[in-house]
Amino acid sequence: MNGKNLAIGVLAALLGACATTGTQSGSRSDNNAAVDLASEAAGAQGLRPLTDAALPGKACGMVLWTLEGARPAAVFRFVSDKKAEINIAGKPVTLTRSAYDGAAGFGIFERQTFTSEEGVTVDVSARFGLGFEGGAYLENGLIKVRDANGWSMVAPTAGIAGCKN
Picture 1: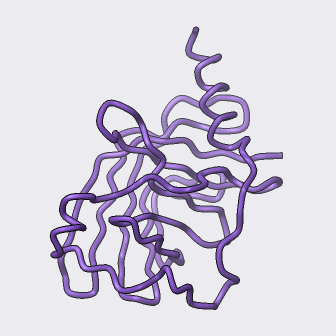
Picture 2: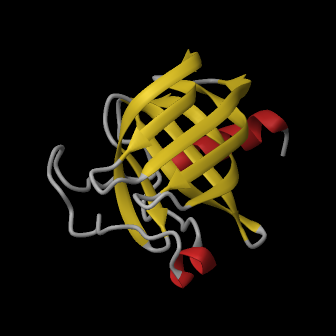
C-alpha cells in the first residue's frame, strides 16, 4: 500500500465512522468527574482510547493517537468551533479550546490549550506534515495533561487534521 492509499485508509477509518454526541454544550456530564493524575489508576492507565474518534459530517478538526502497546489508539478529538474530548484513565473529559497559536489549517493550530470545567488543562502541539486530499498529517505531536492539583502526564502523539464532507 503506497503512502497516498495509507493516508486515505487512515482518514476513512478515523473520520468515516458514525459520530456520537456527548453532553450538550454548557452542561456538565457525570463522566466529567474530577481527574486525579496522582492516583494509582491514572498513572497505570494514562490516556485511554476514545469510544468514538470520528469527526461528524460537514465538520473539520483533528484526531490524535498514541501507541497502546504496539497498536495506535485515538486518544484526542477536537471538532473545530466545538468541544474536544480526551479519555484520562477511563474518565471521558470534555474540553473547550482556550488558547491557540502557530500555523493553522482545518480549524486547528500547531499549539492549542484546552480546559475543562473540572480544572483539567490539556496542551496539544503538533506540526503539520504531508498533506492529502481533505487533510494533512500531524507530526511530532505532544499532549500534556494537567489536573486541578498540578499533577501532569505527557504523551507523544501523531494524527490527522482535516474536513469531512
